[in-house]
Length: 398
Image (cartoon, rainbow, N blue to C red):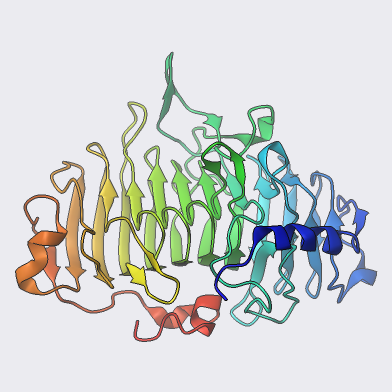
């Protein structure tokens, strides 16, 4: 069964939440007596001092929990973080504010998993025992903010800080941007983010992973996003690089870039988003800087979950991005690369798995140099063996 009634989950939330006991986790280390606690340690307050979430435990976000400036949250391998249900200003999320740090270093054997309280998964499991991998919108997501430069503006002209989408303007911890391109927001490794993207307003949902003004000394590697109602990963400016990313079954864009992100995405797989494979927007202010997306494999449709992307590549007329060594397969009629004449967009080694004689049908305009028919997978799929997608067989043949 691929779709379950959301009302069922709301009922499940009431039952599951009832077994949790609330506690604050602002201590230097969490309570060692809670080791192997699979029912959930409820986190109800912001994190204002160094805190550790330990292997063997499940932590439950009771709302929007912020790691405040000057504090570090350490998440050990194998930890599971579950978000309670909530929408609007009450949407659950883990927010790393500017000046705060997240040291979340999972491993291939013990990834860190962010999911919903409706998920019955316990430490040591990879696949959910009760939620299908296309159930989305059950909680918020992971938001990391930093002090790196962005390209934004308002009615008065350029600005170097703005409020991140998904966080109410009443919360000053939602501000991001600055002038430190080498800013360090911590380490994110071997993390799977699932079933998120709850709606906070009309047409406004939280991304699986949001990176706002995040600096280049932040390490983001080996990330999986599954079944998010909004985008898989969205960058808002900043200079952080991301390596080994897998996005599967998101309901909007798999990869979304804004405000002159200046980093590189290297080695990635996208499987059947409901929106764009890429939405690559240009700068919003006068500050201009480009990014690189390279070494990827994109599966544009998936018959098992009846999903297909809206197009192949979506850019603005003022986008600045270099696309290199990317293979598209599972292409359906009507999917195209658009705005191929945008001056800031370059194509190198872009291969569409379609007959050579049909290539022009999949490009909105003249086929540019660097785009060809045929080809083979470009991502190194072997590094994703730890993911839910791999365990579910979605990477076979890639």
